[in-house]
Structure formats: structure tokens, C-alpha cells
Image (tube, rainbow, N blue to C red; front, side, top):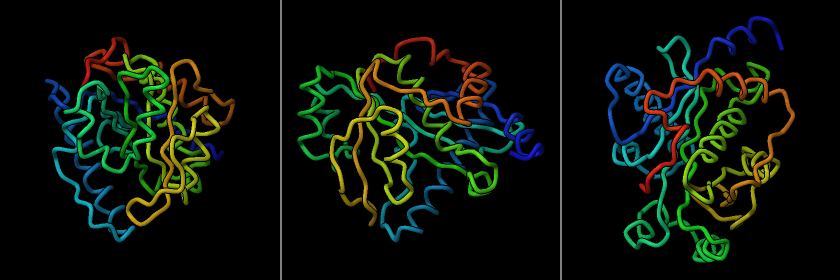
Length: 232
């Protein structure tokens, strides 16, 4: 990795927020997360010729929204997470789950899962993709998400993967189980994957150095990574 690229990566900071509430002293950063999420996913849906809409309720329902910032003034990448209780129909009937086949819930319940955490809206600024900076920040962000999962009260975490970007393959290497495969969402092939507590694998790859650094130096004003999360 070129020296200047590594220096730029080392300058990034990881911020963790509850998407459902504003935090005094961090409104600017939370606003940047929202605007980056909105712009990034509007572009993604346009690219995929999807008629899906990017709307505020999908952001502020998130139990956690976490992102990598440069100088606290630009969001380089982000991911969002919601926690749902599978024993409550109000959660099971949430629009997010309309693409989940029934067998996914059968697998989760057979594994004793009551609370499930969703891993959603992965986005990385195109100027910071692997071809530019030498490592996969998508990999880094997902690994950080698995650490948030480990700190949560959820027994499983699920995600819908964009397969032509090989996100499914990356998560399978980290210990994900296939819950449903070769579905179609937003005009692309997707898998639904799941991780269960204690089964995540931390790969010894070039990204792990940055995962460790960002996790140890994270900005977590509400202590989200240090306490169990209540159901969404």
C-alpha cells in the first residue's frame, strides 16, 4: 500500500450512534451520516434501475448507524443496524422483512434466536474503494459491524448481500451461514446470510490492522458498543 494512502486510512475515525436519537455535541456528524446515506443510496438505487425510495424513516429506525469519518467532516463509509424481536409480530411484519422467505425465520427460530440484528445499507465512497486505497473498507466496516453484534443482545445478525459485488463471499469467509440464496432484489442477485454468536471469524488479512485500530479508537458517545441493545 502506498504511504500516502495508508496515512489517509490511518486518519479515519469510527463513529457509532443510535440512529433513533440525536446526541448533543454530535449533531454535525450525525447529519453527515444521514446525508451520505441518502445520497449514496439514491445513487445505488439509480444505478440498479430500482424504484426503491430513500426515506428518512429507514434511517431513524436504526438501532445503530456507524461510519468512518475523515477529519469529522466527510463520511467515507457507513453501515446501519436494527434489532428486531422475532416473538413480536409488529417486528416480523416490518417492511424490511418483506423480502425474507419464511424459511429464514424458521432457521433463526430453530437456532433459538429471539432477537435478530440486521446489517444494512453498506456504503463506501467510490473514491475510497479497494482499487484506490489498497484495502477493502467494505470488509473493514462489516468486521466492525460484527463486533457491534458481539456487544449486542441479539443472538444472530442477518444481511442481504449484493452478490455481483461478492459481498456474500466476503461474509461467508467470516463465518456467515447461507439462509437463502440467489434471490432477486433491486434487479440484482442477493443472498440472505446469518451469523450466530460465537461463530464469527476474524480473518488475518490486510484489513484486520484497520479493524483493530478503528475499534480501539472509536467515538461511541452513548456507549453502544459497551452495553446490550434493547429491542428495536
